[in-house]
Amino acid sequence: MSSISALDLARIQFGFTVSFHIIFPAITIGLASFLAMLEGMWLWKKDSVYRDLYHFWSKIFAVNFAMGVVSGLVMAYEFGTNWSFFSSYAGSITGPLLTYEVLTAFFLEAGFLGVMLFGWHKVSPRMHFFATLMVAIGTLISATWILASNSWMQTPQGYAVLDGRVVPTDWLKVIFNPSFPYRLAHMTAAAFLSTALFVGASAAWHLLRGNRSEPVRTMLSMAMWMLLFTAPLQILIGDAHGLNTLEHQPAKLAAIEAHWENKPGEDVPLILFAWPDMQQEKNHFAIEVPHLGSLILTHSWNGQIPALKEFPKEDRPNATVIFWSFRIMVVLGMLMLALGLWALWLRRKERLYSNRLFLRFAVLMGPSGLIAVLAGWFTTEIGRQPWVVYGLMRTADAVSNHSAMALTTTLVLFVVMYLAVFGTGIGYLLKLTAQGPHEHEGDTLDEDHDLLPNQRPARPLSAVDEGLNAPHTPTSQHGGQH
Image (cartoon, rainbow, N blue to C red):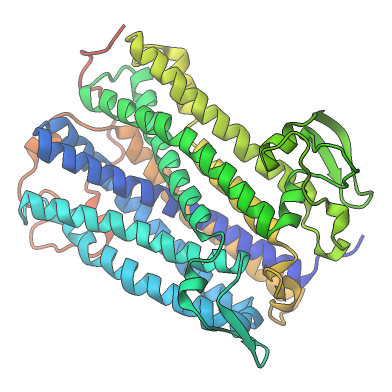
């Protein structure tokens, strides 16, 4: 058995760091918009419940935002250390796109984040709401630039190759490349779904523990409405994204479907279960539904898609991996839709806050949005292989000249440090979430509630001023529907 190569180790290291990082921006994007909605509802209705939820979730947002920034910095360095040939080849396009993200999004978020987290009693309510809106818009702009860069690597256009490097010839084509609109919509919807499931799971957990306070019931209700509207929308976006992939990355779609060959006049079945074998070029233990693949992928009864055997072996993605990562994402998406529909049915029966089986399911589904994000990300990135810039530069040509020993050492250090630092951070965030929102929390705040005397905020974590050791007592037992 051959030993693992430096290329494989570099890919594993980047995959590990980006997998840790992506869960934080997903929640940041969703929570920022959720906070803007909460503050807008409070200003409109003057209902203290929305204000109480805002103060509760703003603390969780601060912790999550801090971890997202720290985890993202590492990847910027990896482009230079582990993927220097890629940076040299495509840096004239990816570099400016990431710079635009810093100039337009990060500066916008940083400029208004302090007002959002520490300015509740220091600026007018409308100014504070404006700051929250700017932070929420900043997160969406940030996602736009990051996905523009990644989408260009998937479906490059608007460039020319000069002296062995790509240079931009049309920035509008670079940014608005063929896959960009679908990826942006898909990732944004995924972020909203992940946040809705996180918020809903938190509310369901508190309801199961007997906390039926108005803030808890409100956040469950809002989460389930978001889930009900966004889950079917995400399915439609996913279908459109699949058709785009069929047009621009047919090898990826063939690997996702584990579709090996076409025969004249035959349909494409939908393979529900199989073990794709890359060596033998066939599927083991396949369970298929005739014609359904044609209907979904080509919107026709007997339509065909390109098959894996139509591509050279060296140009095929790993079907064994992305066949399953894609199906994990799809199954979780179906469960999200089922949860939203179940919530709608219980809402009509006035049992949304009292059905314990539903609440347990909502708790179990809490991490499903983030798992689906990771599964979708694996499908996208592994499905692009063996290309780092699709059709232009192979991943093997992009990696730096490091030894396997050096990459093994840094990978081990990354794993240890990430588990220690972000494991602690995630544990802290979950403990904070477990405290739950307090009714009339805003009534107890004075002008310096978030800072000690003569202290100024130094970081987002300064917004969290509560200890995590004191047990939380349910604030209200009334108001539950039975």
